Image 1: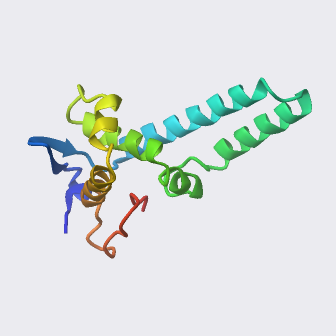
Image 2: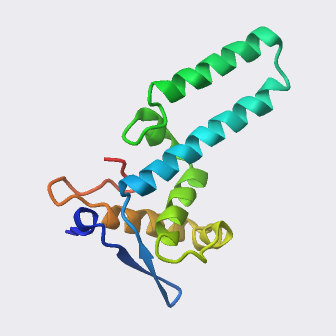
Length: 147
């Protein structure tokens, strides 16, 4: 079991002969991911607003504001849990974890590093290792854990 998250120590990840440090989901990483999800919600609203009538646009804005105000995009919420089922969002948080120790890592590199199913699952496994709480049961296979 890893105590990395308790000490904010990175897990080591070897990808094609290069070693990467995968930072645990500290409050800083969680906060950046939450801000990313909120930004994506506003972008989705702005895009849909172009195609909606005024009443529907007002309802969409109210729903977006409600989601943000009620913590739908806060770590540990259903919203974050659902987001982490989507590869696009998993790749984003993986990028946050990698760039904490290597600011030169790009989102394009992360996409390449997770292009195949096996590589994608390896990224999830190493994030689970970086975030394993020794007091919890082993994380389930297939999705990053939020708590």
